Image 1: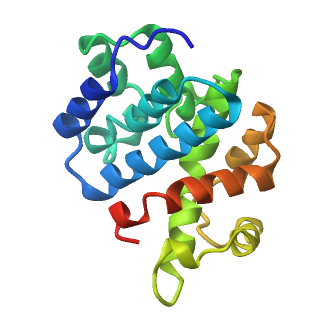
Image 2 (image 1 turned 90 degrees about the vertical axis):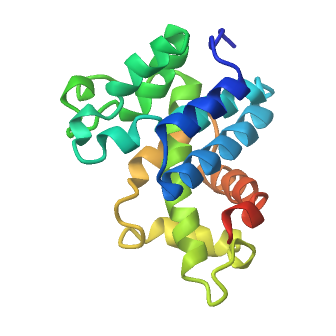
Length: 195
């Protein structure tokens, strides 16, 4: 894996500095553990992939009210922190193709890690929503079978773009396996998430 310019401790400091919203912090952590699980699946650098997951929405608190700046402001923040261009490009790639971010609308993801990041961070929303509709609101109550059904039901967690999640297949992971990896990863931090 190419150098990131930022280690895990530095990444955590950045999250503390730029993210105050507790839901966003949880989403970053969910994406981190999912990316670590994907790195393990591919025999890639787990710390590196984890850092990318942890930092992917670092500018969200600053841009949620002006989403055209999402994935734009983060570039400056990361450069100041010493991040490599590889880290910056990988992080902003999850915003490629979004019409709400004009600077990135025409760009397309091309690498395994880019496909994985976009797919993973999107799927976290469906996994968490699946837990929240359980009678006990627990991740442990979400079965893979139930998650597969929720994934196919486009009205469930409708803001989670299934087309982006399916980019996992461009990275070489069939969708059912991707759902399984993500569910297991996030169930692994259920206590931390309060679910």
